[in-house]
Length: 373
Length: 222
Image 1 (cartoon, one colour):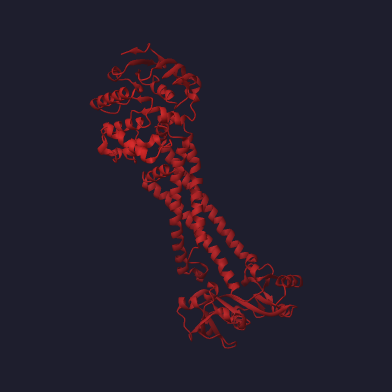
Image 2 (image 1 turned 135 degrees about the horizontal axis):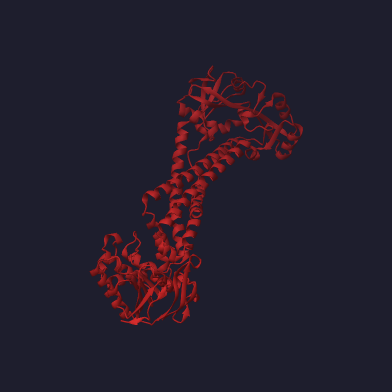
């Protein structure tokens, strides 16, 4: 194996430009996979962190809503939810984007019950908001990015002036990239006067949250209730983003496979006479295949390494560019799991792309290969 | 050593008769030349003897056994046959030493043993100073000697040389041929040389003349 690998590596330097172009193709393919998977996983993790941040047993949204911003729960339904048997506490959330001078897609969160979330919000500076005073708690990431400090006055939705009374850090990039307001202020900004986006229920100690959620689903045909741990799995956008990431990754993989296969078909054609010589001096067909496949695996492995580096760079770039104010959506790191997965994928790519050309090389009749011009 | 019995090789469904009933034998340690004009079937015959191709009809035996019975065939080629081609066909991105090692890659031999043998062979060929040179950095004659070293790597019983002096000048060609013949005599190795050069053929033990895929004469002793 070492001998075959040593020859394979030396062969890569025979046509440096071609090796480089194939490497570039593999790098782009792996980079696409890593970026999209990280984005999809990051998005999911953000939402999981956000839900885990709070002491919520059951999450309620309107049935069929793809995202929280598309969900609507009426005030009357919310009141009925809060009075249900085995529900010891309820809070509501209004969430949506507003335009601001510094960000066209600035998320604001209106909470009905600050007490439930205070210990999770993590006030790092200033104080919590007082309802009715047009006050806002700015997320730490937003404050740093847009250089906003405590006691600053800011415009939201281009017409409402708010005072920044504190800066919070919850650990969730979604929340820390936005701002928390009193729910009535948020309803006014987002024009959701009699509705909220989500309701959060806390069940009595000893009660089964699953049974309470089932009861909600039975009584409210227009609502969907799930235990908070299962909320993310139900969230359609997560699934959509995940499927999108996989589809594009598969397309990238197939494209890279074709590039690698094309390269090695050319290589086999160029080295036909050499293949004949090697067979004549005693090389087995298996050895021939091994060398070609190893050549391909080395290029694709390097493509995997560079692809990960490129993906991290690309994620940082898009995060920093903050296109349309959605930079917060983009993670800035790649998990070890995704890196390992991408390296594994690059090796599979190396094998898949070179298998047919290697088989063709090993199937050549030595006498015909020797006659090849 | 080698026995060729009524060997035929046809292409294009019989339209092209590269060999049309060849029979002869080569003794152990014997050096034989196959002569004939271009396209007469010399290279085809060498390919068949070297198990690089399969005859359409007839039988080729090596050491008393049909070569089709040697399985796997690549191991037979590696251990028993050495090839020397007209153009050296060294791998351009491998050093002379690495090129000479190539025939042993398929065999279960330790890397250090293989390296040492290759180095010894190159020394025997007078290429000790060029061991780590790429083929492009040495002369044509030196490349051909490295190719001979490669052919000798597994101590073959039979050397097949297809126009071994065809790509070098006369002086170098003579030197290479003398070298090959001396080597075969020393190691008691059989050799079959395909050539159209009378001076080359004159140095062998026997000459077989082929024309249009058939033997023109009874192989005569030189």
